[in-house]
Image 1 (cartoon, one colour):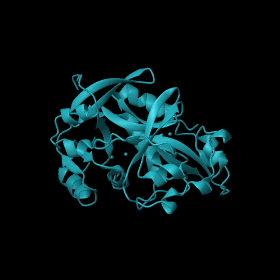
Image 2 (cartoon, one colour):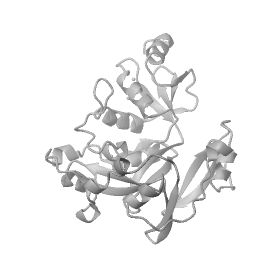
Image 3 (cartoon, rainbow, N blue to C red):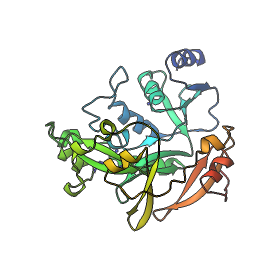
Image 4 (cartoon, rainbow, N blue to C red):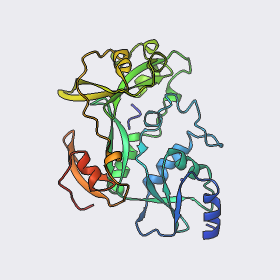
Amino acid sequence: MKNMKLFFFSMLIAILALTSCQNNDDIIDDMANVTESASLRSALSSLDLLINEDGTLNDLENPTGNIIFDFCFDFVYPINLGYNNGTTVIVNNFEGLIEVLINSTNDLFIVGNEFPFQVEVYNQDTNEIEIISINNEEEFATLIESCDFNQSCEDDCPQEEDPVCVEVIENNQVIIITFLNACYAECEGFTEDDFIDCEMTSCEDECSQVEDPVCVEIEVNGEITTLTFLNACYAECEGYTDFIDCEITSCEDECSQVEDPVCVETEVNGEIITLIFLNACYAECEGYTDFIDC
């Protein structure tokens, strides 16, 4: 598996260059919380190879259309990045990150980031897309090493189009990942036993977009996980018929957007990770009450 698979004229140039082209990103004249990171530069350089000059994704380099599989991980936004001229930028989404990349020059480029931050990665053991915290440069370097950016499925696999599909779990919902052919899927660590019929996965064509959530319970590695579907049609399209009551809580509806971060520690697959919430309300909404110092 490819495994878990951006940068000096003056302050004026930085602001003019970036405010004219970036997507809802904010320039801040403060590098106090940003650390120079060789791991970030390596990650952004590798990500740049997946992008065309106009900022669109290169289809050959992005065979699944899911950045977690085509690249290695995705940041949990917003993230704070630092330029070589001492300014920082808050990147609010993946599109904003791409704009940072395509507008970087030999004189103005990213050199670091603020720790801690979170990323989404695929856990092959649980078949889930999970969120992990990166607390320092050492942990970031370990992630980059595991990505093995030097290995490319495109180099190893033929370009013959014979799609295969697999199911993975993201946010307790089943999503379908489509690979160009079996070689690409196997390059990402899947086996023939994981393949499903792609022709049977077009639930969007079969089902309405009316939101009437239903939930089902499944067992993953000996643990019970609840999956939430948009409506009964989607669940039945995926082969589930035994529904349970959905205890749906919208933290965004319940909590304010005031930024007053709190942190908690939790155990995931035997490892202690740190989760960062916008404020205490969000943490409590998710069931956490024992906060630690962020």
